[in-house]
Image (cartoon, rainbow, N blue to C red; front, side, top):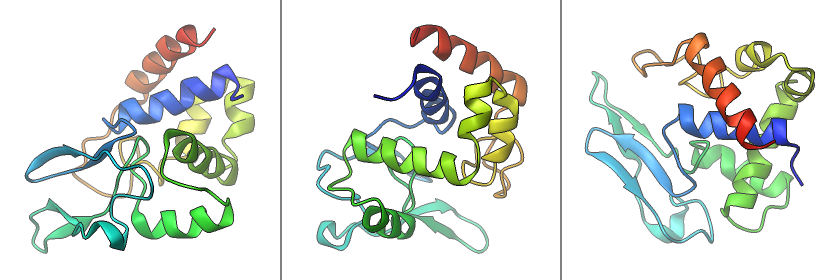
Length: 156
């Protein structure tokens, strides 16, 4: 069982990334979804090429997928480390919770320092303020804090 404050933060990430559990990175061609959760949608067995994310120059391609826009190369590592059976919502949540743990964001969330948690995770989710990829249209801190408050009320 995931604590309500963590559920609210996970919902915040999904909202901020404009992603659901079945979302494939929005490239220059627009949003797409997938239906087979047996593995990451960019795994070799699906024969899906990376998505043209930005025309550039130079052009940039991405394999981001799922609620947390998980890149395929990171998925491979964490799937093994966390012994995740598939790319189901539960596995995606476990991945995101591990990232929050590694970024030392969980204690901040539990203590109510949501701004601190967002700052701690800004390099992971580009839609957070201070994301390292330019032009991704990050949300403001105020927008994220307000949305977190809304989600937090949902889970209590």
